[in-house]
Length: 172
Image (cartoon, rainbow, N blue to C red; front, side):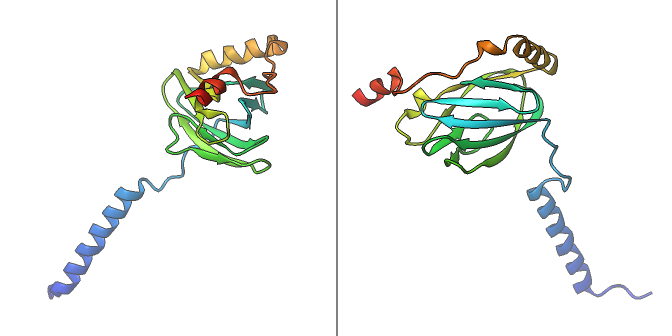
């Protein structure tokens, strides 16, 4: 049996190195996990609306998500350009009136954080903050039950003019 020519061994080594490098850079070839929840997000001047279509729940300026899951956000603006920004999202997502965007976001451990609008929409990030509550699955289910029992307590903000924080921003 004749040994393989040196160029065959070199070519095989290059193919192996390229394959390992590509797999390391791209990550595993398995598809990402499917979202467990879809939330419609609508940015308004000067507040956020979060609708849970499969649950029949709508909240305002407060986003509740199950921890250790993937959430699909369908997002748009109701009025002007806004930019959705939250922890776990590498960059802000520009929201255009009438145009829906989708984004799947992995949610980590339970905890509380805040998201903002990063756009120059006239309201400033301070005025467009929203609270994010990531809860363990059982706690998230209890939150759903509380929302179902008290739906009338959650009403959109009635802001016809910029909130007080916008006046503070304008005076700086």
